Length: 305
Image (tube, rainbow, N blue to C red):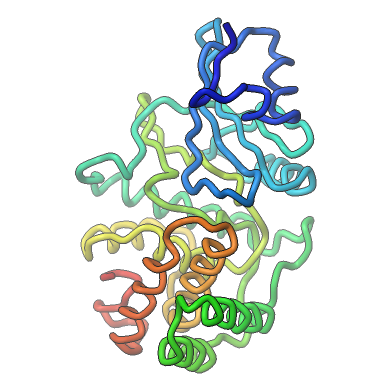
């Protein structure tokens, strides 16, 4: 009997592109488990654990378009070790290795040495691929500020953001905007849930379908937003990152990067009708309530929030 996902036909669940990759292996599927982190009723993206009759366990991903899947494949080909490998692509689908181990988000406490490695993996990605131009220059600072204003309007229209918070976010972001920013390959979803400590002790980023080209410091802002840590843990992560690239450019304009990350996250969830928009806005409110701090201040929110 063919496997199903919650009673659904497997062809319907996986879609034509991912099903083509699965059938190309020539080995029957024995189980399919949907592992999509933020399922959306209006978007076709999804993630699946695929188990085969030969004992293999692989990960299947549906992306929003064939162009997006091809871009991720191209970027992943140049970023080096520490990121799960793409085994095949067809249309808008990717087939990836399944990394056996424990996501950092499932650990009661992440060891200090692993936090240092996690920061180093992101720092090395940014340092190695600064100026990567094969996929275009990415958004400018003005593009980001304009996008922030549009997202604020969207959230205000949906009654998810009050006028005071909207004004505070735009004022803080405008006041702290950088004149320019370094651009290169970025992850866009770097967090504990997407980092697996393998059975061999290696640390691997396992969900890389968000790879793109953009400002490194916005990637740091998203990592801060997606991965709350204790002050000590944040300092260990930061030390690992700074072994490859300085944090100071991000810290100097942190209100800008964090506002873009949090408002953007809330707007993305609203558009996808996914949960989490209000949590991002609550985090934004807490950040702005603390006011600006100097980059060298040990209380800086990148390290303590």
